[in-house]
Length: 124
Image (cartoon, rainbow, N blue to C red; front, side, top):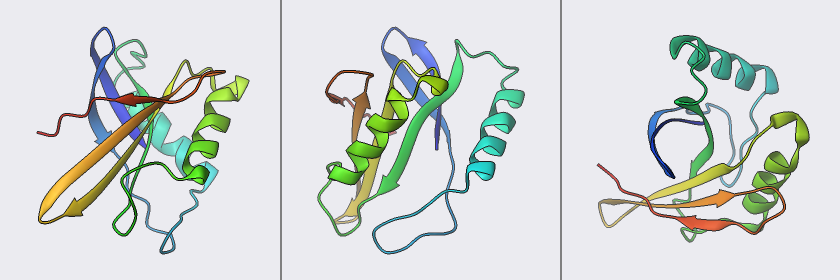
């Protein structure tokens, strides 16, 4: 999970990312209960200031694959953002990989009823 701070119109800084302990070579599944607990902990620490701090989306690595969303990645993200109960205006998918001793990243924003859009990523 990615949690971020809204710093300017259309700009966010990732302030926290969770790491899942269970997964396979090319996939993972998060326990719903664990996800809700992580959300609640983050919101409590940021005093429920949802306009400044919020859940941004998901991240994972593609150590052996291209640095682009798979069809499963895109379908999952679109399903989450389209789910009315989430109340999400958008979600971000960040994909990272280590190549030639350098961290590389790509990000895409998903919106209800719209195609994904490529985001600008700055690594610091």
